[in-house]
Length: 492
Image (cartoon, rainbow, N blue to C red):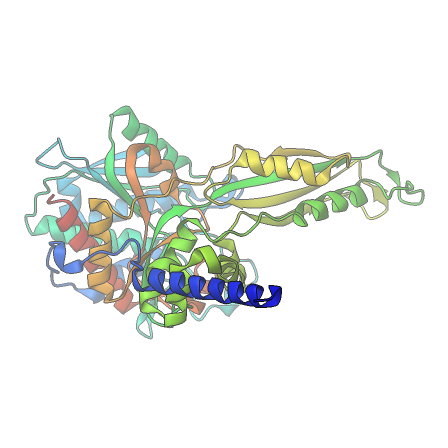
């Protein structure tokens, strides 16, 4: 046999071997994080007065607990009103729980369990909301702080993020307390007052719990939802966040001599130097990798997707470059696979005919698990090279969270309940934004991020956006989920 024939035979052999390996891996593929709903004993659902819950949420929306970047613009009295309203509206919950206030306006509630040897659970929902963009008020179907119930929904800022969680959680706690339920496991509720800007309240709550030696079985906060039209399957999928990205903002300063704009320096001055530095950093992105919670989500959903997706998910050793390419077709998809770089703010001269003495830019990073702020800084320093700029962090970065278990009893409880309520596959995922739950990691074995409501991908835009609203169906789902969670996890 000639050399050509041997090469052809070898090539055929390789194709056969690869095909066989792909086939075997696909046939034997087992999706991660799967839970048999029938194997987990869940509490039964109690009757729910959805209209009453919706009216309570509408009332809560009317408290303008808006967190501004400049704290001087906040209205502290609005938080006081909300606190008083919670006590009046949910008397049964307040009879069984002790209430503590930390960092001025953050709330920590404790419902003692009968067995102090059991690790408690922590449930979270923050009180504050983001501002309404000035000038957009007229674009709202209903005024953002009127708390209107119309067209089968509660309308207003915070109806989803995060008063929807806060109110439905208290609806559940109040109903369970009124029923005479007594938890075996201690239940702790943490409600921060400034999640949208600083997270001071959640950090203070974590410090309080740490001082008491508390190590919770799990913490549950906002973060992910049941996506009605998941991009991979087109069908509902319950996504529970098992990790979240870190958060850091870098300040880049280009010192310059300044002076009159009629005599600019040959190098263009500080603005030009700054623009080169920002462009250099932006042009050195972090590589996208098919790994971590973002990849785990696709692997977990593969059995419910097309056969092609299952083949790809079962054989990432061969198809990971293609999976990265497909996932990164949208900015949201790409953000699941790497640390993102987002130049957001610029400052130069205070006048158009004056050269700035320093030009400044800010770049916001969302740091993926596996990376760190130190790695980000090193990469940025390498990108700017010898450009005369100074790089620093605006504040101590929040590092990416640890990845929580998808095999623990806590995961099994949450996943089984989410699956039973949604009748949809349950998969882990990566939260690309930030939540207060990151600060509870030191006092919790696992941290999960999930709101039990159905939203289409396009509907997620109303969170922090115009016309934020939540359907009455979702209000009912959330009350029922929290009620069953409290009775299930609190009884073990």
